[in-house]
Length: 325
Image (cartoon, rainbow, N blue to C red; front, side, top):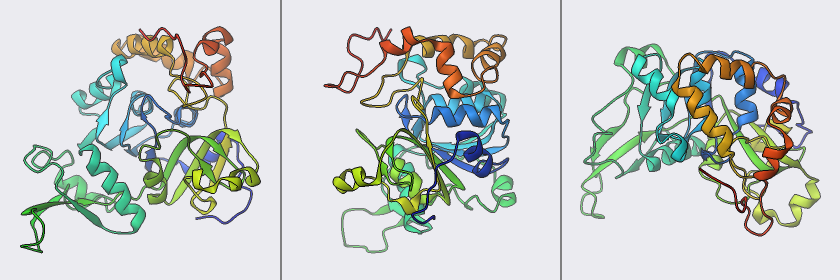
């Protein structure tokens, strides 16, 4: 973890430095909220391959990384983009084709796995998933676990309660820790040193960041350190947890960033149609990912009229009157 130096980087440099072929990558956000999409698109443009990807319950970011062929394996609780894709589309196609290995856990289990990594523990106990097929169905073959020292020997382990007579749990599930090479988050505010403020629900972003060896933060606003120190209780990550700070306006687009902008239903509907069609999907990538030099260029292509429709109302934090169909 880094000290209180200036950690400002541009997005291309940050991705090139920390996100390499075959690395273990975690991305924050939840379904279509605060996905670090500017960083996701930069990873895609840099043609990074064979990523081992972790997410809690992510949608657009996971789907696009898989659709671009960046991901070899995924560990996740839920992959979906709300009504636009109750199950992520390119994710599902890749699983059905056998091009991506997937291991699934419950939402709570994924939180505990990141928390264990953040605490420096090999596992944490829970009762979550007892009686379900999550315990029985393993996504990674034994040969894969044996060949990759970063993978745990077991998906999870069920044990008898070693403190028999204490509490009402007869059996416990041990879930293995996650310690990614790098976690990428998109947040509302950060300073040049890496202090982070998230407004609204933090999801599991804090645990994902603290479990990682390196952290890239993209932010809507680069703010003065003194401003964040005025209300330190509102900050979620201290500077020593962060390696790179990248200011990117609308860096979660087309997903939402609370108090700044909503998700873009037009973009997500168009994406859905392209993702469903194997012939159209390469054209989508060429136009909206590889055909633009940066996230700013993507926003220029979308146009000010559509972007203004999703701007957040100052009172509610969401776009008022947005046609979400």
